[in-house]
Image 1: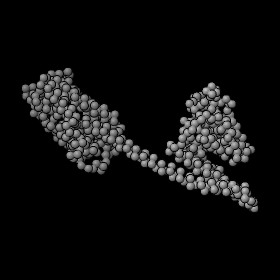
Image 2 (image 1 turned 45 degrees about the vertical axis):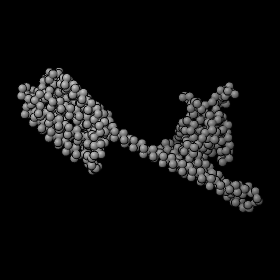
Image 3 (image 1 turned 60 degrees about the vertical axis):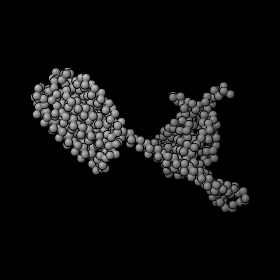
Image 4 (image 1 turned 180 degrees about the vertical axis):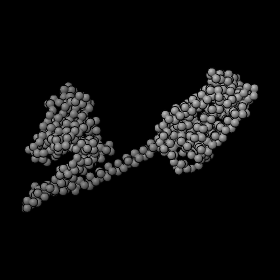
Length: 531
């Protein structure tokens, strides 16, 4: 048991109100329809045979006790309150003792120790157990007691009580020809006193936060008190007082059962519904904010591109000295720097817009059958314009008859441009960059780009595909990188149902692989046959 007292400060608000009476069902006819029908049927059975009535009434109550145990046991993870679990586990053993009482009842007498007195004795110890359980359970609400410990304790008490009765030393409760003993009557009044105390502890500790549950439990305790009082006046074990007491007991069990349903099933379900509604509202708000972001980025891209196009156009004219010599060579150098900076800003704007489109679901793929060798050569030419041609050797490792890829051409160009561009930027001059296109053992085709550059630290591999995350900010800044390249590759790969994998050893190089599923692979012979 973990010593964690229940916080009574959170238990505020009215204890029992008219609203809680209505919500609990106590003043609704439909709530009482099943118990009323059951009472009517049992009354008809009692007119025919009281022993059968007694057996059915007890079995119904026992069934309710076992069902409430199963519900509380398997839903205990949904509530932080141990009160209902303690109550349900206790009622499991109360139901077990009531079963012994039923089997020992006069007219059935299926136990070795049976008869009116035996049944009354088992009844008394069971009701003591129930009253003490109801008295102490509210105080245990805030303690983390394991389910096994609760069940073990309840079982030990039940076995001890039953053994006490069967030992023959338990006081007599009923004498043939005389009726109830003073011990039996006194015990019933003592049990009533314990039940009154149980109502006080229930209202004092407030182990259930909702007035609805509190109303059901207090009502159940009141019915239990009247149950015990009826068993102080009967002379005949088959009389009206006995009939009334068993009906009241059944109704009391029914109310506790309803309280467990309200606490362990209905309340978590309502909480789940509330959380779902909040999640839906948050999702709607996020979608609205995302649309506003997309609209803003679209507007900003237009506003930024217009002056940038002018900057790039005029700087290109200046470095080409279209309108005449600039004079000082430094001006040519400056105009070239202006043009490159403008090109970088345009590329950055395009990357940000692509990320926005993909994340908002507005990026539409226009799929076609691509020959990756042609795409790679096209990319290599573009990269070579930004990097000295003799600084890296691009080696393509793919067979002439390797299959085509069913993909969006622009997206594939962007993927390869980012990966080959990264391999070029982060590798030393003269090193090789290898691109391969091969099948794996799972029926997929894998596009891999391998370099022998600076590599990525192990602690960065898991986050490197996140936006604006850089393996080495100093190196990235040197090469004008902001950390969007791999993130865009990751997003575009997902759009193509491809799996991205990054393997790297710091100081030795990196391999980035994209595994495409079989449905995106087109064999060349199939294409020819179709043609």
